[in-house]
Image 1 (cartoon, rainbow, N blue to C red):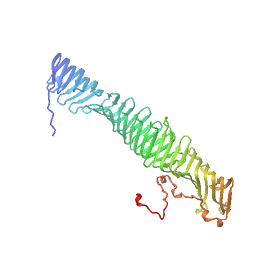
Image 2: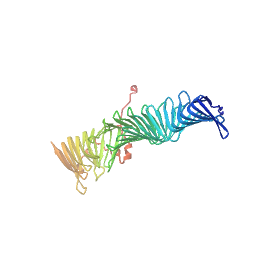
Image 3: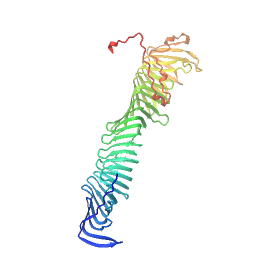
Image 4: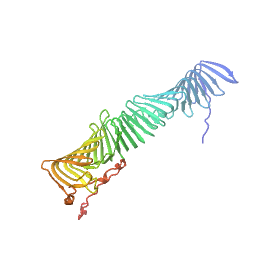
Length: 504
C-alpha cells in the first residue's frame, strides 16, 4: 500500500528585511538580505525570496543555494520551490554538486521525493576525468546514476564517446550503452548499440552490432569484450575480421585478439578468405592464427589441424599450414596434398611460391609424388615420383617439373588424336619433365637413365602403379563449402592380431 507523504510547511530561518504584500488575495512576504529557509532537512540560502505561506511555495533570487543533504547541493540564479510537491525548479547558471560529480545546465528540475534531477535544455556532467554532455538528462541522486538522451558525448583522456542513449554511474564510472554509440581512441574505433564501457579501466563489453576497428583491422561479431590497456579482445559468434593491408578475411564463432602480443586466434568453424578480384582462396581449419609485427602489419597466417582450402584452380589439404605474407609463400605440413588442374601432388612437405594470388612454383620435399588421371582413360594414372621435386607454373598451370633423386615415371604415351602408343616406364637419378596441354610432352633423363616404352599388352599390370601410390580424389574439395568436410584416411586393417587384456 502507498501512503501520501505528510505535507509540512516551509520555515523561515532568518532574513535581514521583510516586506509584506498581497496578490490575488494571498499574503506574500518578500524577504531581502541573507535569507535562509528550511524544509524537511533541506536548507535554502539566497539574496531575496517571495514566500507564499498559504500555498507553501517560494521563489528565491540571487546566489541561490540549496543544501539538499550532507552530500548534495543545488545552485542557481532563480529557484521556485513547492513545499507540497517537494519539487524545485532552478534556472540560470544551474549547478548540482554531490561528492562524485558536478552537473551544470540552464534549467533543472529536482524532485526531492524521487531524488531525480532532470534537464531538457542541454547539460554537462564532470566526474573525475570524465566530461559528459547531452541534450536531455536525468540524475538519480540516490544511486549516483545519470540517464542521458539525445546527442550524448562523453570525453575522457583515452576516448571520446558519442551516443544516442547512455546510462552512467558516477560511483563506478561505468557507462551503459543502450543506443547507437561510437567510442573513439587514438587508434581504436568501437561501435555498438548495447553494452557497457568502464571509463576507469578502459574495458568494454559490447552487444548488438558491435565492431572494433584498430588501424587497418576490422573486427565484429555478436558480442565483443575489449580491454584497451592490455589490447585483449574476445569476440563471440558470427566473428568477422578483415585486414585491409593484406586483403584477408577471417570468420569463425570465437576469436581471441591480442593486439599487444601480436596475434589473433580464431576457432570453431574457422575460415580464412584471401581476397582476389578474380578468384579468392577459401581456407578452413580447426583453428587459425594470424600474427602481426609491432606496426600491426600481418606477418603470418597459420592453420592447425584438418586444414583444407579451395580456389577454382588450386585446392589442397594438410594437417597444418603457414602463409608468409612477406614473400607470399605457403608451407604445408602433415600429409599435404595439392591439386591443380588434373594433377595431384603429395610429399612430406609442400612449399608454394606465389606472386599475389597466383602460384609461380612449388617445392615438394621428400617422398614427392605427382599423379594425374589419363584424360583418355579414367582408369589409368600418369605418375611422377622422386625424392624432391620443383614444379613451375605459368598462368596457374603446371608446365615444368624438375625431379631430384630416385626419379621414376609411369605415363601413357598417346598420339595427338588420343590413341595409345604405349606405356613409358622410366627410372633415373634426376629428370626434367615438360607438360603441354595438361599432358607430359617431353622427359629429359640425367645420370644413368633406364627408360622403356612398352606396348600396353606387354606392360606388367602390377607395375601400373608405383610404390606408395595413393589417389586422394575423394578428398579433393570441389567447392568452397567442401573445405568444411574432412575425409579421414581409413586405418590399416590388422589381421590375426590379439589384444592382451592385461595391458589395458
